[in-house]
Image (tube, rainbow over all chains, first blue to last red; front, side, top):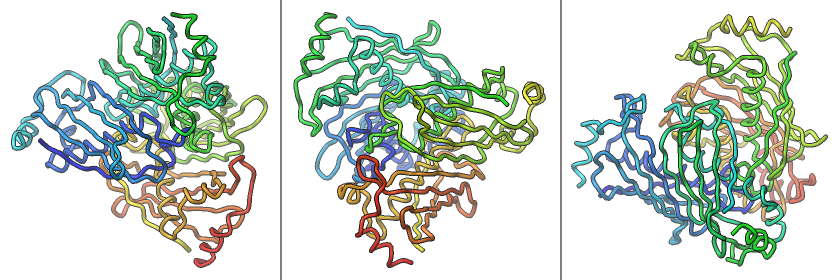
Length: 132
Length: 132
Length: 132
Length: 132
């Protein structure tokens, strides 16, 4: 398993008129969190793209428990539980202090820059295998 | 069943460096689509809020098939298949010409303005019952 | 002069906890409005990009008078007052009924896809000259 | 003068198909930067709002020099050069290493929660006077 805690802070741009983070913005936090999770094991998304790959999202899901507020410090607990093969599943839990605000996942594929499905790059597979 | 086709157009702000709509923006299109679906049957979200209710998203899901591009005209086919009771499920299909680009749903609850769960407003239930 | 009225509607995603449109989102409406202004005279931004050009924003400005609210129908009155040469200035006025909500402008340059400044494409200049 | 360096990182959500940060997102970085500048001198925006005030943006301006890219680490150098009275001007310079990417400012007023112009709160004025 690979896990990473991504810390961020909530700003006005993400708050709606209910006074809480608008529902799609948690998925933006997820993106930052997974970028940092991958970087923490030496996988830089920009490098993967420069090698001719994209990692598009195939599915995204989020369950909302409690709303984050303006100026809240939140943590996105991010993890990969299974060795990614053709697809990579990443899971997220957004927490504030001890409260869980949202839980979700994204499922990713690998494609070339024309959008055609590809196997993950070798370098990526080699890094991943160390963790499973 | 209640259904509504919401038409919109893709602008630069939603396109990422893969050249397609960034994954969270489909969920923003969903929001516009469900607002218009509800309005099409006489339910104005602003009115519901003014009566003391909120309709927060409890769960959101999206499966991505094909990316929408800048200046694409897309339709979000939106529907409610079951009479909403404590919760309301809304389903979405994003199409361009005959291609399905994304499929998703959102699940909503009703709360007061302090976030406490409430039964849906009577006026809302009365309108809904006409369709099921 | 070239002018175009772009109509749009305000959704939840753009409303902040003051209950009005968040300040950067007017500049997103500007982008949609200028895309449609250009299209109205036969200039399709996607085509310009496919010919090897980009139209990056060099400067952006907005003065805020009154906040647009959720479900407001607004019009972005958009115009180009002077023949674009190396740079193109586009002006915007966001109105709701007779009230002016925001006034702004963007200044654009032309570059190739590596970001190097270029003269506008010939086809673009020819279209523009008809209007000035 | 009050100044603060706000560090942030660029993620996919803010990158457009030119491969650089979309122009409105710099103004979102500005918002985070000014929130942290104010916090650095003990002024918490949430507290100001809880005292019955809002700080809406009256004008916003940005000049774009060079585009920030995905995974870039950037700094938003933020400062207030003059004692805020009825209005507060905040200036921003977005830098990456030694390159200046964007320069801008925002002008803010103080209102009550109904949007009526007000003098800044006393506590705010007292803090500010220490710096000028």
